[in-house]
Amino acid sequence: MSSLVLLRAGEPPAFWKGNERLAFEFPELSRGDVRKAIATFMDDAQAAAFRRSNYASLDVRVPNFGALKLEAYVCNDTEEAVLASSQRCDEWTLFRAHHELLAEAKASPEDADVYWNLGVAFIDEGEFQLAWHAFEKARALLPDDGGIHFEIGKLLGHELFRVDEAIAMLERASTLAEPSVEVFVELAVMQRSSKRLVEAERAARRGLVAFVDHPKLLEALGVILLELERGSEAVEVLERYVTLHGTDDEIEELLVQARAR
Image (cartoon, rainbow, N blue to C red; front, side):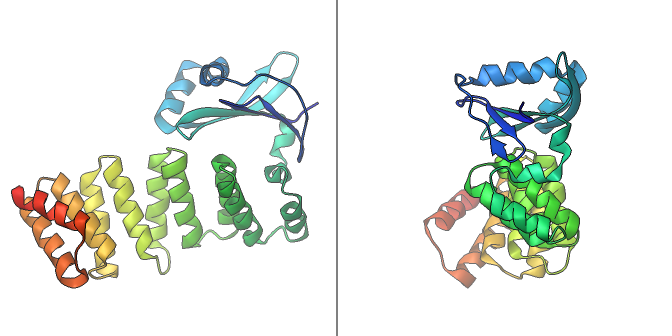
């Protein structure tokens, strides 16, 4: 009897018992198959919340199977789902086939580095939902670590399409000790990509206070000002970029657009 089933488009269902994958022969699932499976377990309100956030974690009951946990999310722009028994609540099942890291975690359960390494391994495998769980375990152990918050923010925004949560995580990272320039760049980019241009400008300017005249932040601010239809300000920022850091084709093209406006 499996304790977890993964439903992923383009692959047959994957069955796991604890940290061992079971060998079953099933046909590949289509995207429609996965969507229908998720819809089966959600009422209208839950489905609407899932469409807004791209994530749901629900307690469900299935005839002849009893109480299960449904986790639904979007990965690579496609819905996926995990159905798990109560055994899934055991934190060790997170490790799946990573037996060496599992042994390390059981030997040192308070070592956040183990979960960080597991998250990195899952990213390399394209298992972004599992990576998020692993990094969240690390964050629980080190709640004031800006690097963990930053990594979770990138993962949520770029891979799992949970933009509101990503922005909140990056905002938190920006308030912790010694945030890197990449925190402000990523925050500005995330805000801009979700059409929150005023907030994006604010993030870029905050970054420039901490990292004066950094080229990535100057370029980001120039792009944001262009989209805000503030061409003269964009010209000023981009010309400062050229004066301090030289130029390239992309910057020159941005300057052409800014001067035309």
